[in-house]
Image (cartoon, rainbow, N blue to C red; front, top):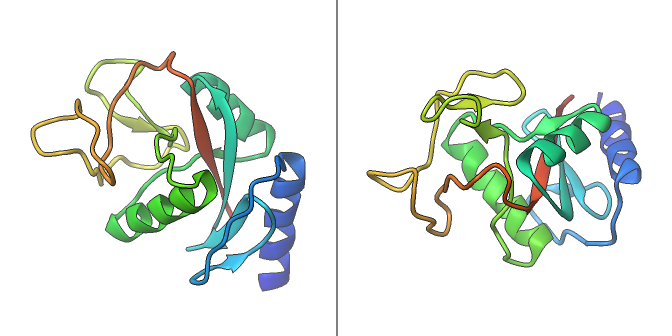
Length: 147
C-alpha cells in the first residue's frame, strides 16, 4: 500500500512540478511539492490563480483543493503550506461560500464540520487562522488526493 501511495503522490508531483522543494522532517517527502500524510497526498501549487481556477487545476490532477477535517489536519496543512511557500501562507484550500454567502462547503464534498476562523469572523487574516477573500483573488493553492 505504501508503494502505491508513493507512486500516486509522485504522479501528482510530476503532473505539476514547478521547482519548489519541501524540507520536512516529520513527513516523508515524495518530490518537490508533494507529500503524503493522513491517507492523502498533498501538492502545493505556487502559481497564482482564482479559487475556481485552482480547483479546476486540482481536478486535472484527479484531486481537489484540500479540505480540513480536524485540528490535526489544520496544523499539518499549515506546516505543508509554510514549508512549500517559504512562509507566504496565503493559500487556497477547498472551503468556499461562493455559491451562497456564509454557507461553507468543501470542494471535495466532505462535511464542513471543522473551521479555524479567527473568533467573531471569517473576515480578518491572522497567521494560522482562516480568512475569507473574494473568490476572484489570486493565490497559490494546496491540492489533496485521497489515497
